[in-house]
Image 1 (cartoon, rainbow, N blue to C red):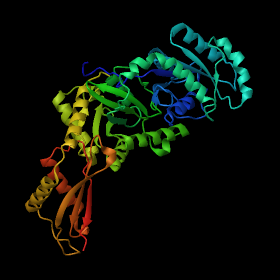
Image 2 (image 1 turned 90 degrees about the vertical axis):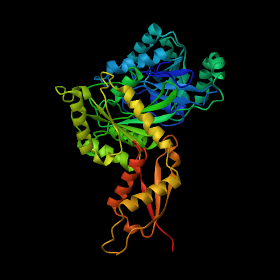
Image 3 (image 1 turned 90 degrees about the horizontal axis):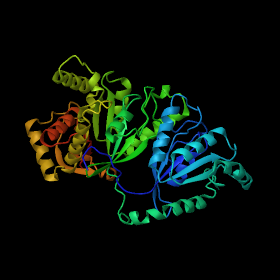
Image 4 (image 1 turned 120 degrees about the vertical axis):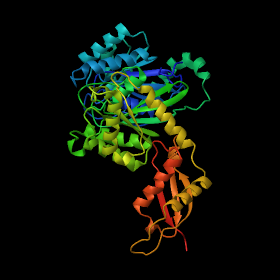
Length: 465
């Protein structure tokens, strides 16, 4: 397999959940995935991208794909894109769950989707009558039988009603996959590096994911704020497995004009925390904005490994030679994001799929550098040499000099894939450690050891008397 071809990291049956807007597809998805992945609100058009998850409730684990609602003009700017997303999901699925709203009864949009399924899909289709909170709604099954997919299975995603029957139906379809699944059964699911794509709206995050995947997997639009959910996408590059997390673009709190944007921002912030590495995507053509700096501060506060992706490099000072453009980009990024001095940058064009390989070469350098950490002995010798080269000054008030007695390293278990070291410095009095001298020690460590993309947090402790 060539390095730039995406492939699923494991083989399981895939179930696509389709239907018109606001019938409860995302609620069913979350119930089957046993976690809240897709945003659920009583408002049509919330899900636009394909949302991916895994269902382990069935005897045979399967992949789930939640799609945007099709068949109505709930969000007319995106109706065509959403329908394409749903059709891609249906074409790649092994089983399709066609969800309708039992409370509202049969709608014209339901009949339209049924025609699409009969015409374009040769996959098994299961009709799911959602919102059947009581037995009274199950009498609606006769009306929905007109769609041509039987009487359907009545469920309530909100209350979990009759989901055991739905799981049994799904398992019946999965029996043909058992022979293939046995080949990988017993092996734990390896998701590899969790790489979060973050940035302000319209910086090109979804375009970058599409360029990486060679697939229109996420909706790309000139209208900002297209991505609302944080979308987990399994991805294999050569022999390496990754999970790409495409997030909603963050905007200032005062400009979040709906509850959907607030939830999206919360998902993005959570994606940063659970990721192993962050790709901070900035629009180089427009330049680093105040919002870019605020997002970058969030990455710094979380202590996350980071790579800056300078997107739209093809539009940046196109009249100048490439070396001059690269130097100008470097100066701009280092001036505006000076507090992320440890983060390397890669200039790319997501739209033209330029320099995508360079991103993953840089990811590998960050990961490999983190895994080849200095030993405690090497670290102590390095610190002592730095002190001899530039001794600390006497504190003006306390009238003492800083003495570093011992240095050791601690790691947070959350960062197993890309270990982020915390340097614990035992000193005579932690009040004597100035920010300038701490920065000096960090620079000496970076001079001697490759810490590309990694923050180096210090914990300074006074010696026990």
